Length: 69
Image (cartoon, rainbow, N blue to C red):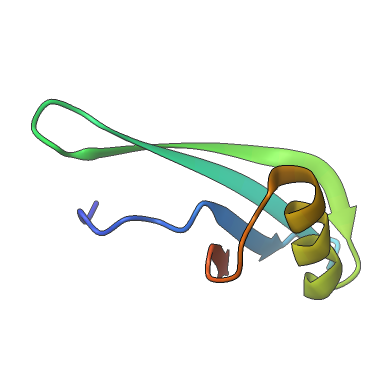
């Protein structure tokens, strides 16, 4: 894993074609190596815009904190 920080909100398309949000939390160990914990949210969305709006409203996400896969 690289030492570049990951974006805290990952939006990914699942096998049914809907979009899901994964919240990623980054901590650093004593050698400053990133440890990332990912939590997939249970909600699914028809569009990326709907997923972003949900993350902004419920998790306080800001522009630039999203990654798409």
